[in-house]
Length: 125
Image 1: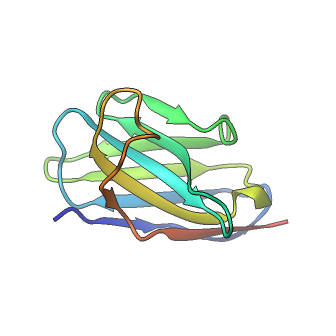
Image 2 (image 1 turned 60 degrees about the vertical axis):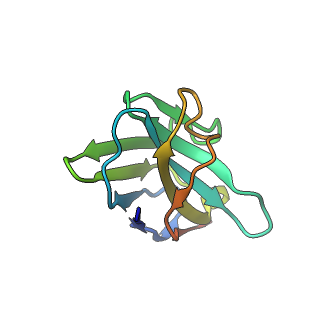
């Protein structure tokens, strides 16, 4: 059973930074993607940033230049990170991580089957 657990959320002032972490309980072989998504109240879930098994990263336009996604891959599991800088109130949302096998170029659009429960990010302005 694949489990994903996010951490690192919290309340910060506009302009500050946060780093989110996601621990993935299994190891995926080649051909996987891991992504960060967010959902604010009354809004649809959106892809924020992701990375695939080739190390290719992708970002939503709204976070390019401010957010950095990275991953560490151990023998039996993965860790996914999201460094968020220059946060704005518009970044406030529940942030969720996801992982699964996926085709190239589908890191933020794949039909992920495995999701964490999320960590709340609130940016005060």
